Amino acid sequence: GTVCPEYPANSLGGLCSQGTCYISQCKPNFGDCNKVTADGCEVNLRSDGSNCGACGNACSAGQKCTLGQCV
Image (cartoon, rainbow, N blue to C red; front, side):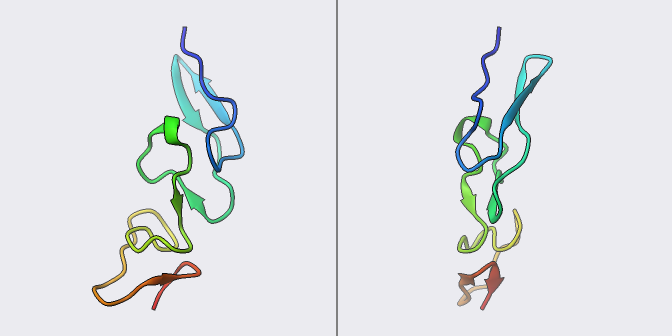
């Protein structure tokens, strides 16, 4: 059967449902933006310009992500 990682990177735990692995919850300020359980919550939402404050929230050209805000 499927063996899921107990604690994927930067997560608070993983779970398995009908043979599929899921991340139960990311640690604060991290996001599983690519929905790939194997790499866990891979994005730091406080500094990633493509996922600033939330997955998919990209900063405009010339801005950077600082503490989860585009500035």
